[in-house]
Image (cartoon, rainbow, N blue to C red):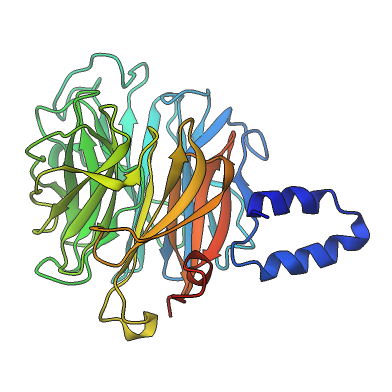
Length: 382
């Protein structure tokens, strides 16, 4: 029985059996999902989409776009909920209120040194749509702008600051952060650097890039664009063993597989973009996170990167995959369950247990899974 089938069956049980059902669910490695962001439920949004989640020093911060109309540029706010354990969640707060503009593509980055979480996103000015012509550059009021705000607790957020001049190339119209978490480099020449994965337009003619900060978010810069577009689109990022970067991207050229690229200088330049045959892409964003490095004895002295995404057309049938070699191969794979599964975000909840945020139907759900479940007991992650 899949996790989804278990939920459906448990919902039909008489009240006298609910305790038994709950106990069984707690013992299941893949926990039953719960709705976290639902349109019109304690909010006025017509649609809620685009999840992003980080573990900020023991606090899960989950972000999404609260859309006032059910379109990509629907006067979206960035909304947030927080949790210490993945079970009890705070009420929803608006991290960034857009007014009549639209805020898209939430990208959370946690700075372990200052214990600050940054939220990087884009502003589409009122009336501007991503598929319509728009001016390039950094200053025109009718082009896309990059904004960033920050928090210490996930509940109180600073006023957004416009960083477009230093984080967008002058010949670019659209820029898009993630949508997915960024990361902070923990080793190598650029240790401590905050990374925001980007793709840049014009629409449909995307290239890769990364915005970064070397002073804990006081200033932000942008590296070189990738030399070849390679049919990329929405991007996710993880640190490599050497302190470089792996980007995994949604395709934008009809390919059935995702695109990947590596950086060896902290996002300042990129190797050639290639297609990865082990990462399916049915026209959808994916989740990606570094779980552990090979020199971390507390987590089992293994290098692990975890991927989440749908594997079937129509954004269905979620899978989790794991790589032990910086994303070169993905030998571990397990199905989450059948049914609607679109954009997702994954991070560690605690050693051995992952937190997962994913779109299903017209809402965003939260769940957890263990590495024991993922590997059928072969790798506990500890």
